[in-house]
Image (cartoon, rainbow, N blue to C red; front, side, top):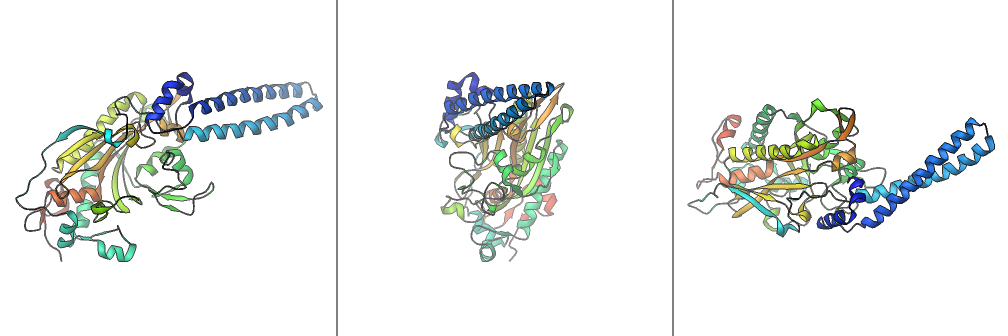
Amino acid sequence: MIDIKLLRENPEEFAQKIKARGSDIDIDHILKLDKEFKELSLSVQRLREERNKASKEKNIEKGKEIKEKLEKVEHQLKILENNLKEFLLKLPNIALKEVPVGDESKNKIVKTVGKPIKFNFVPKDHLEIGEKLGIIDVERAAKVSGSRFAYLKGDGALLEFAIVQFVLEKLTKEGFIPVVPPVLIKKEITDELGYWHGNKNEITNNEEYYWLHEPNEDQGMYLVGTAEHAVVPMHKNETFSEKDLPKRYIAFSSAFRREAGSYGKDTKGILRVHQFDKLEMISFVKPEDDDAERKKLLSIAESLVSELGFSYQLVRLATKDTSFPAAETIDIEIWMPAQNKYRETHSISTTTDFQARRLNIKYQDSGEKKFVHILNGTAFAIGRTIVAILENYQQEDGSVLIPKVLQKYIGNSVIKSQK
């Protein structure tokens, strides 16, 4: 949630920044509600003072009259407060100044690392490779679960666990706390996270995520689209001690997405599936440490990608391509030979104090409580990482070399046909 002080201090500048995020929320209307709320709050305060005075003077009739009036005004205040909050919840986070303004066509390539691998044969796509090796099975998954699900078998399954072990070994040394979170979260938590409040992402018609029960005000459990959906709200209504920050987690969970609107080659194999596993970094830091933490998470993600030997590029997303709660997102895109292009595999984002305000997560700074900044970053989306390994390490005979850093976890250096 945005600090309403920002709106009050410079409404015109704020309105421009909100428009740059693709929002058409009426800032003037919010300020009008805010003014009415402050005025009504003063009325409530005065009535309470009059009630207390009447009580001290033992003026029962006057006290009763004031009480009835106070109850009505307090009810009006509550309605107005909820109305104001509803509008504030629909305001996206403000983009950092480095973020390009515009839609995805304005996304900016920050740098490219390494050169795309070249083969002396026509490279196969990951699905053809995986099926011939007997490590990916989408046909049987379709029989059991429907389209866009998959079984990982044999060395395919071992490859997933090798990636998990590789990441955990590295990040626990960096002070990250491993966590396996729940994958079902309450509707109220999704509201507070702020992923559904964009113009095209209202929870009632959201085409991206799965839920159990029809969503309404009282019920609805949602399947997480990434581990951060369950880990960020873990500290809801809590206050960190300053000495406990930064607090860093490396979370492993399954993730669930409808992937509505995707088509063509993306829907084949395991590049875009409805269920996949993911390793996610989440950090809670003091505001002044946000920039350094962004650089740290990005550095770790780049290091992981580099150690697997991939060519990649960094892309800073534009304002309208950045998720609702994020102030900045930098994607890592890994080279996929069969597609002859880079594909997004990682996202590193800061939500500044946006989610912390909605979830009431603070830290103690001397005698004052302040909102933390919350950041998240992909360590590996495992399915897409396996896609990248199969395509970049494929051999002409159909086998696939295992990246050196993963070999000790699998106990082998090559994947051969397991049929």
